[in-house]
Image 1 (cartoon, protein in one colour):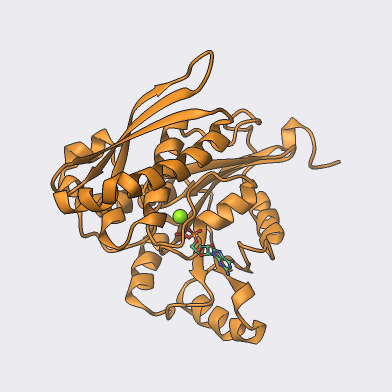
Image 2: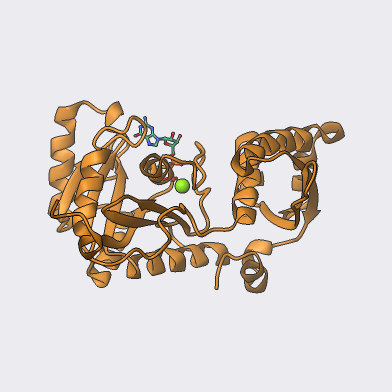
Length: 304
Ligand code: GDP
Ligand code: MG
C-alpha cells in the first residue's frame, strides 16, 4: 500500500531520442496502447514533438517523442534539432534508442554528437536496444559492452517495441525515475495535441506510404477547415503543399487516382481516430522551397 495515495503519486517526463526508424513511435504507441504518433516504415516521419501521456493510479509519465538526431541541412531540420534539445531539457529521464538489428558503431560520429548533447543536459539516460526480436541474444552482449563504454548509461534495456518484450521492465524503471509530484495533466487524457494535428499527421502518413522517394519529404499538410456538424459527416478540408509542379503531378496521379487513393486511406483512419464519419477534401498546392522558409515553418507549427 506504500505506493498508493496522492502523497506518493509520481509524475514526470521521458524523452525518446534516436535516429529515424529505430522504433521510437512504435515503443511509445505500445506503451500508451494507442496510436498517438505516426508509425511508418520510412524514416523521419515524426517532425513534431508529439506528446503522449500514460497515467495509472500510481504515476503519470509524459512521453516526448523527438524528431530524431540528424545533421541539420534545411531550416526544417534545424527546427527538428531545436525540438529534440527542448525535449531533453524538459525530461526527467532520457531514452536513447538504438536498432539492435542494424546497430551503428558506438563510436560513430553521429552517436558522439548525441552523447555530447546528452552530457550537457545532465539527465539520467537509459540505453534502449530495440528490435531484439530480430537478434540472437548472445550478439547483444558485445553491443551493450561497446555502448556502455562510450557513454555512462544509467540502465540498459533490451526490448522489442513490436512484441512488447522487455517494455514492462522499462516502464517499471521509468516509474521509479519519476519524482513524487502531482499529475501534470488530467488522468483521463492521452495527449495534448489537437485533433487537427493528428488529422494532418494521418494524411501525411498516407502520402509517405503511397508515394515514392522525394515527394513525401517535400510535403506538408495544412488543415484549413474542420467543421463538426450536429448531423451527418464532419467536413475536413486540407491543403497539401509540395515544392514543385512535377511533385504536384505525382501526388495527384493519373486522372487524380493517387490523390483519391491517399484521401480514401486517410479518411478511414481519421474516422476511426475521431470516431465519427467525415468528408475529407484534399487540395494539392505548390509552394517553392517551403522547407527553407522560417516564417512558413512557424505558421505550420514546426518551430516556435
Ligand atoms: P521511429 O522513426 O524511430 O519512430 O521508428 P518507427 O516506430 O516508425 O519504426 C520504424 C520501423 O521499424 C517500422 O516499420 C516498425 O514497425 C519497425 N519496428 C519498430 N520496433 C520494432 C521491433 O521491436 N521489432 C521489429 N522487428 N520491428 C520494429
Ligand atoms: Mg517516429
